[in-house]
Length: 327
Image 1 (cartoon, one colour):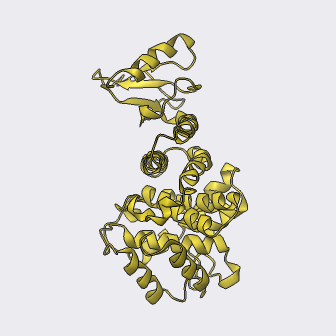
Image 2: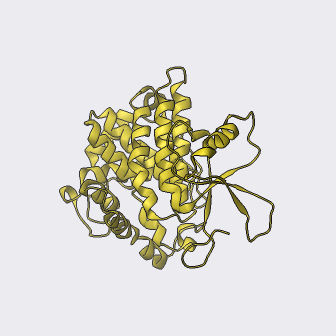
Image 3: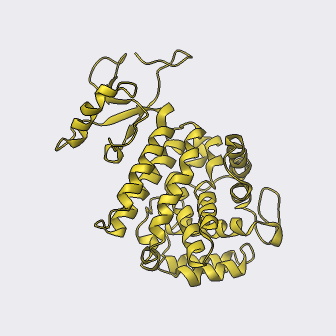
C-alpha cells in the first residue's frame, strides 16, 4: 500500500504511454490500476530502481495493443514531463511526420501538463517543465505554414483554463515569430502566455468555473489571480522577471482601467500587452457557457470597438496584420 508521510494515499495520474521511450532513462515508477480492493488499487508494474524490469516495460510498450492505462505517482510528474519532452524532441526530428501531426502531438502533451496543474491540482513544481514544452511548441510554429494556414483551426475551442493557457502561449509565440523577435524572446513571450493564469489555482473552483457572469464581489476575488500567479512563480525561483511581468500585468490596460496596479501606457511591459490581446482573442473565439463564440474576424472587431482604449493600438494592429483574421 502506497502512503505518504502524512498517512494518506499517494495521488496517481494517468500518463500517455506513447511518449515513453525505453531507450531513455525512465526515472519514475509506472503503475497499472487493478480491480483489487480499494486499499491497493494500483500495482507497481515498472520499478525505476530495478534495471531487470526494463525488458518487461519494453514488452508492454511494443505490444500490439496495450489493454490497460498506465499511471505514475503525482510526485513524479515533473520527471515524467521531462522524459516526455525529450521523447517528443526525437519525434519532431522525424522528417516523415507531417508538421500538423507533430503539432497536435505536442499540443496534447502541453495540455496534459496544464491540466495536471489546473484540474488535478498537481504541485506547482510541475511548472518547472513548462520551458521544455514551450520549446517543443515553438519548434512547430517556426514552420510558419502552421500560422499562415490559421493557428486557431488547430487548437481547442472548448474553453478550459488549461487549454486557454496553452492557446494564449501559442498566439503570443506566433506574434513573436511573425514579428521577427529573437528566438529567446519568442520563448519568453510564449512561456509568459502559457503561465499567465497560474494564479487561478488559488481561486475557488466555484468562481473560476462558474457557468455565467461573475458578481462584483466574485470579480474582485478573481482579480487577485495576477498577483497570486507572480507569487507562485517567484517561489519556484526558475522564471525570470520578463515572465513575472507578463503574469502580473496581463490585465493592466493602457488607459489605466486595469488591475492590479492601474498602470498606464509605457508603464506596462510590452510582452504583457501582447499577452493581453492574445488572452481576450482566445477567450472570444472559444466556446463559453456565458458568452457567444465569435469568429476570428468578429473577435477582432469586438476588441477594436469595445476595448479600443485598453489595448496598445500598434500591437493590436500588428496582431491583426501579422496573424490575420483566420489565425
